[in-house]
Length: 98
Image 1: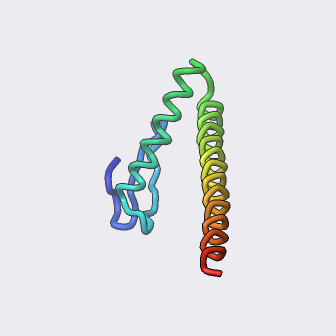
Image 2: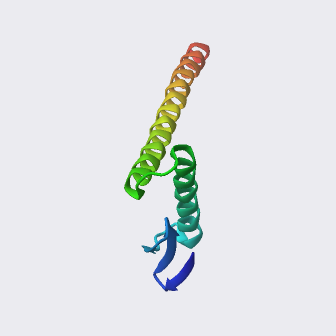
């Protein structure tokens, strides 16, 4: 990975060099994301052996999406739990003040 132009970062995944436009998260973030994707691709390659690049990439994308949606569900469960606890705390305080 190297910086090619001021506004972009070059990353390499599966032997393909890709220019990624920098965003508000910066170059280090782009590198971190591309390293994560690269590791997921390597993990799929290791698990299934020889397969087309497309199949490996699609399976890696599915694994990443699965992790993303599981994370969203976990976050929603935490938000719901905090909401219930907050409502109980508000009720408790209201009872004590009245």
